[in-house]
Length: 552
Image 1 (cartoon, rainbow, N blue to C red):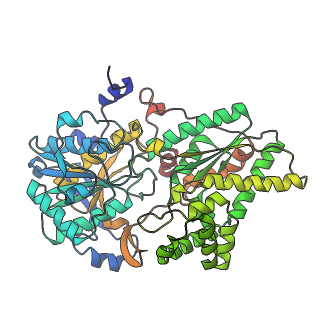
Image 2: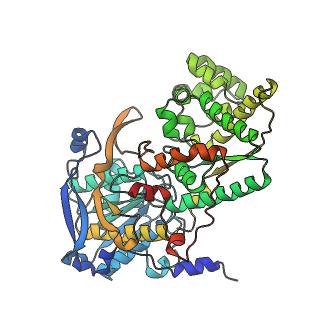
């Protein structure tokens, strides 16, 4: 009995698309360099920190001569951070690229993430081994990890491993933190004149690693389509049973791109956008009032059901909650030893309340008991509250229920409210990549080889014009320092790739805002269905609504 599904067998045979420039032989493709670049902000500080790699120009590939593309090279690849659909195809594209340049070139995969390069744990990726992973989800080909490469000791260990294996280029596939580490590693290698290049690849389903040159991070397309299918299924059930309100929390701690994209794809009754909450300084009570109003209005229209989307990181964007969480993090860090001696929640809560400011004490007291408990749970390795473990959807449900009871007792509400809660996160991180992500990721990896062949370091692989067919995509790269700013981390100013939040003045949010009032009161559910891999382009190869709107 085979362990492979029929779809899995079919996807192995799928041929990802590439930008038309890559129909040429590698030695017939050259790099064209643009004007010098600047960082997002803090130019002086970053120029000093990245003396060897700062300010490099953007790169675009075009037809021309590059005999260096035929050189034999050894390349190392690292998967860093959380999974995202398409990671295997980045490695497949990189492998096929270096083999197209020279069949004797080798690709080494460092095992378990960044720790693999400092612990010298690697395998040579062969054609036979790779063929079992093409066009599939997951990071299991070599595994991933969250070790940070940021100390000189780590850099020296990595350099020693590269020298041992004859590796002259390292490709790091990761999000903003991982690519920040890639920039630091590339700078160190450049200053040492080591001859080892570093190239980054933009990965995160959260969609917060983007700018004018990086139009979308890989995995976002597949993950949002996976979540949207599930949301659509719940919408169909909600509209059939007509008795439940479904509150769905979606991944996205730092930004609401996933929630916004899923809203554009499915038309829910309520979608909370964290960035709007922060900009308008909405309190938790105001959010509850807004949700309650929609529930009551729909009930008056005979529709005591609905769907609400909530971004994972919402609680940190609500002004009083943000202050409360900050105070809790500081108090618990400074008094960790004493806090560990408080074994009951009642003792912990009483002690915490004595040490909070008056406003934060009130904010803490109005929260449901289970949310208070979650805020006092073990911190993450950085000493911060683990936001993904806070059941924000249940918080909103409980507080809306309480509000409706008040109205009912006052004779202002005669309807009903029954709820269900959901959290969609891991369901989308390792899904079979969509055709878009299969081709985009393959192109990012293939393109990374050409950045190496062009002799560049400290660059991110960039494919642009993504709302068009793949043949019209533009291949190139941008300096990692171009996306950076300085931020305070653990009390120290550090260089960090700036996260891209939802911009309220941009087309995707405007399209959502123009329709949300109608979606709130009139059931306008849209059912995207499962990701399709075979059929007409408008069904199988359509990019995200966000990307389409931004391209216009």
